[in-house]
Image (tube, rainbow, N blue to C red):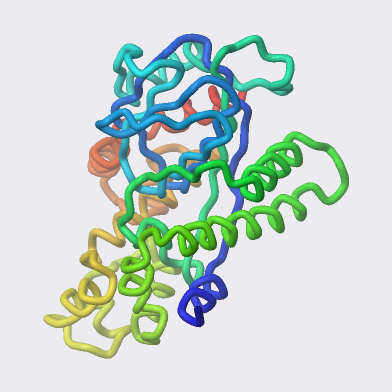
Amino acid sequence: MEQYNRIINALSIKFTSSKNIDVLKPVNITDFYDVDNTLFLVQAGELYFGKDKNVVHPDEVLFIPGGRQTSIAYGAKDGPEKTQEYFINEMASSIKSIQHPNGSLSKSRFITLGFKAKVFDAVNFFTSLDISPFIIQKNDTIITILNQINDESSSLEVGNTRKINVLTELLIIEIIRYIINNQLFLEQFVTKSSYLKDPRLINIFGFIKENLEADLSNRQLAKVAGVSEDYVGQYFKLLTGINPQDYIEYQRMEKAVVLLRTTKQSIQTIGKNTGYRDTAYFCRRFKMMFGITAGQMRKREVLIKS
C-alpha cells in the first residue's frame, strides 16, 4: 500500500479537455494516438477498440494510456476504416461535438476526457507502465466524477477551473484504486515505478524537462547523473524500460503538441523550441510518431472543439 501511496503523492495531474461527441456515421480510425491519457465514457450505442474489436458498452469507460496507439471504431464494429490522417479531413461528417447530449437523437454518443498524469511533473506515468488500453466496467464513482468534470468544463460558474482540477485528481485516484482492486497491471506498477526511489534519475528527468530545446546528448545526461557517458544509457533504460534518446524525443513531441494546441506559433518556431533545428526533420519525426502532420494536429484540435 505504501508503494501505491508513493506513486499517487508523486503524481502531478492536469486536465486537458472534455467534450460530448455525437456519432453521425460509423467510422473506424485504425491508428488512434494521443500524447494525453484518454477516457471514453459510452452514453449510448457502443464503442470498439483494438485489433479484436473489443466492445465498450454504455456506462463503461475505455482508458487509453497516452502514447498508446490503437484502433477506435465509432458507431459500428464494421465502419469504414480510415487512418487518423485521413479522418482529420472528414471529421465533421463523422462526429461532432455537442453542448447538450440529452437532446441528441444519435444512437451513438460518448464523453471523451483527456488528462496528463506525470511523476515529478516529468514522466508520463501511465505511458511508462507500458499497459494496453482497458475497460473500466460500470464503476459508478468514476462515471459520476467524469460527468461532473464534463459539466464543469462547459460551465461559466465561478471557480470551475479549480473545481475541474480537484475533480480530475479524484478521478485519477479512483482509476488507480480500480486497477489495484481488480488486480490489473500490479507487476508493472511495482517494477516500472522503481525510479521513484532514485534521485539521480529524478535529476535527469528534471534536466530534460527544463532543457528540451538544448543539447540533450548522453554526455550531458551523464554529467547530470554523475555517471559515465558509456553507462548512462544502460542505467536509464534499466530503471525506466526505455532508452534516454527515445524518452527525450517523446517529451519533445509532447511539448510540440501542447504548443500546437495552445499557441499560434509557426511550425518552424515550434520545432526550434522543442530542440529541432531542421524543420523538415521535425515534420518527418512528428508524422512518424503521430500518423498525421503537425498542421493536421492543429486542425484536429480546432475541428473537434468547434
